[in-house]
Every structure is written in C-alpha cells, then in structure tokens.
Amino acid sequence: MTTNTWFRQIFPTGLALIAGPCSAESEAQLMSTATSLRSLGVGVFRAGVWKPRTRPGSFEGVGTKALPWLSRVKREVGMKIATEVATPEHVEQALQHDIDILWIGARTTTNPFAVQEIAEALRGTQVPVMVKNAMVPDVKLWCGAVERLQNVGLCQIAAIHRGFSVLEETVFRNSPLWRIPIEFHRLMPNIPILCDPSHIAGKADLVPIVAQQALDMDFDGLMVEVHVQPDSALSDSTQQLTPSAFSKLLGELQLKQPHSTNETALAQLRADIDQLDTSLFRLLSERMKIVRKVGELKRREGTPVLQSERYNQILQRRMQEAEALGLSSDFVKRIMEIIHEEAVCQQLPK
Image (cartoon, rainbow, N blue to C red; front, side, top):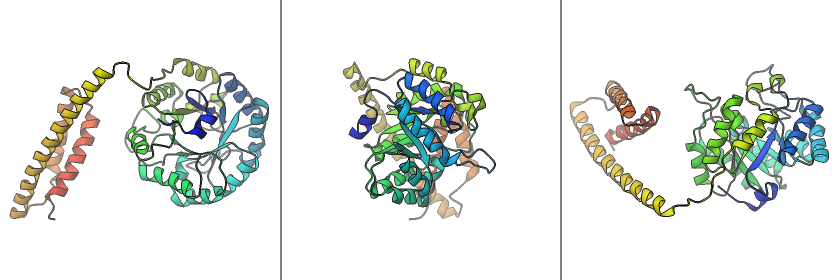
C-alpha cells in the first residue's frame, strides 16, 4: 500500500514482518523465541510487557522487569524490539530501555483521552509508533488516534489492523471487517498498514488464512504472535504459532505483484463494472423517487413512516434471492440495511 522512507529503513526488503510472543514471560522464553525468528529473517521482535486484560485476575504481563530482557534481545540477537504502551509511564520506561518501536493497543485507541496522554508523552521524540484499530468498527477513532500523534510532531507512524469486536458470531476471534482498513487507507494513504492475523484469527490454524487475505488486500506487512511453547503461554495460547509453524506460513504465503500482466483485459473488465455501477445508481435513484411518493401517501393517511413488519418481509425475501444469484446473504443484508435507512430518511418531512 505504501512505501514511506522511514518504514523501508526498518523493513528494507519485501514484506514487513514483526513477530514474537503475545507476552514476555521470562528472559529465556524471549531469547529462545527471538533466536528462532532471527534465523527466519525476521528483523523486528514483539512482546507485550504490560497486558491490558478484559477482567482482573488474568495475566497482565510481568511489567517493567521485562524491558531489560527485550534490551538483551536487541543487543545479543540483533533485532529491533517493539512493545505496547498504554500510559505515559509506559512510554517513559520503554524509551529509557531504548525500545525501537511502540504500539498503541486496540483498547487504548478506543479512548481518545488515553491516546492524547500518550501523544503528549511522545512529544519531542521521533520513535516509530504503530496504532491498532479501536475495538469497535469506527474508522474515525483509528484516524483520530493517528492525528493526535501527528499533532505532536510524530512522523513515523504505522497502523495495525487487528479486527473488531462484533455481536455476530464468526469463525474468527475478531471480525476482520476489511472495509474498515480499506477506508482507513483511503483517508490516510501515506500511513503504512500491517495486519495482526493472530488477534483476528484467535486460533493458530486460522492465522495463515487471515495472513494471506491481508496480502491479497495489499497490506504492507504482518505482525504475528509466535511462541516457543504456545500450549504453556500465559496469554492467548490458542492463537500463537510455534517457530516451525511460522516458518511454514512464510513459505506458503503468496506475495502479490503490484500490477496485472494483462492491463488491456483488466481495463475492459473495469469499464464493464463502471457501466454497471452507473446502472445501479440510476435504479437506486428511481427507487427513491417511488419511496418519496410512498412517504407522501403515508403522510396524507397519517400512517407511520417506519413499518418494521414490511421491512422484515423485504429483507428475508432479498436474502433468499441472494443465494440464487450467487451473492452472500450477509452482503445483501448490509446493502438492504443501508437502502432502508435512506428510504426512511427520504420519507421524513424536510
């Protein structure tokens, strides 16, 4: 997606890779994992020192005492090191231990006050900072966190897509909702975007699927959780890969070419899509003209604009039709929700 100079200085060739355990648990664990990852060509090692957990009593990281362990990884294994910060105190301690890259977690991004405090703590530095998306699917929160960092003078900023908490059950721990990072890239095209397939997947066997999807979406890199003994990990054990599984993932990833080898055929197909889009918008315009007439009739008769039973009938019918047309019922449901919302607005008096 992007080729920022600072980003390519950290990741000079090919796909940007950051890997390491969810949490720093012991010095031996970090050194063993880092040595394995360095042999696979990974240049940036990640490990959580402070772990914000949903409920008290869960493992919340070993804290500041892990920072010298990360420094040893940097010194003896020759990797850059990255960790999460959630408070100004975390920032101060991480910088004192010469941490190369900081990241702001999803829970923190969700809170603009917390992001602003971290931004103020970083004022006057030029440490690279990565911003994970907020827990909720709100691209404005994500962009806002980046803007707060930019406003204090930081220039070396990247984003991390780690999925979103949603009400619907999915096979993933966090729904990827790819439309959100796509919109983020549209709004902030100069910010590199990495994918965290571990937090999206929630299960080790799903991590390669999500990682490949991210590459298919032209992400700049991956941040993957890797642990020498995932089964005994103190946090997020189900989603961490062993070094050998991570090596297998790297070997099977299919990197994408930046341009098609058949631009003529691609241009024709895109022209066909453009023509269909024009037809769709014309049909939507005609639909809304009829909707406004329906609204006028309802006003004359004193009936409410919103008629849920009618909408539920339409929605169920369209979702059934979707399967016959080879369309995803979820996709059609989202479209109908947007159309219905606009139809209700069109019927309200101006």
